[in-house]
Length: 317
Image 1: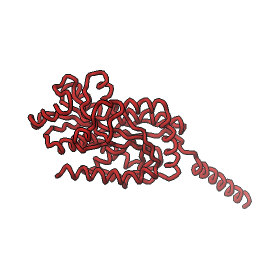
Image 2 (image 1 turned 90 degrees about the vertical axis):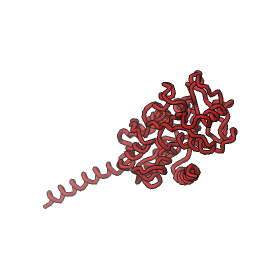
Image 3 (image 1 turned 90 degrees about the horizontal axis):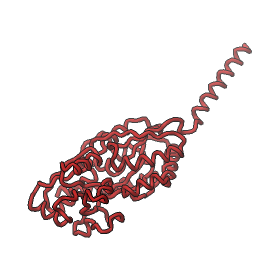
Image 4 (image 1 turned 180 degrees about the vertical axis):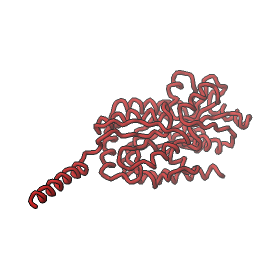
């Protein structure tokens, strides 16, 4: 009887120790996977990589990038939605994947299916053409578009993504007819312009290096203010076109991630924003560093959605 009692106590003690180790295990214990919902080489991918690398050093575990492109970010977002909310699957999402969910049927509700962790920046867009194109400035581009309806093919990084919305809103305001050519990300869209398969590209500053090298010409930018990297290039508002488009970039998780893990990740990625490599790539891509913590981001996303709905409704007029 005594041996049985001692054996039972020993088993219970071992079970308590085992369960305590599970409960108090320090997160993260293994590698984290970060879904980038665009192909490699685009602006989202380029900026997310050094940020993830810096955050991995802070967390003490590797963060592995998984590129799941397609649908203007919708395929990758849908893949993130169905992952277990255990902190080992994250997504580099933002304004693009939110916008796509407002324009077509996708497998997720952006406001309901994800846990916001933090925002790390915003990106502006611009209209670029080949350096040897006949359009020396934005006025030339518009005049040609009016004289040749539908002849100008404009690449974008995804159907009804932010850069598509930007140039579509521009065309709507100017009453010009252009042909939109969607791609699965910034890199293939840029390649199409460089290969002369399209005449223009509504782009993030993934094309910045080609503009500086003289291979591409930047006709206009789409932010509220001039882009500091190209102070001589006017924005659309200055050109008499009341259109302004930016897109925020954030780290998100599947719905249901615990508040403790959200805090750990928020803190790690915030610190990662000070990393020199992240800042170097951000500057190169003209990402404007903006930090919002998980609480601020949760309040900001509905506002962005409402603004996008207004822009979309204007396109239907």
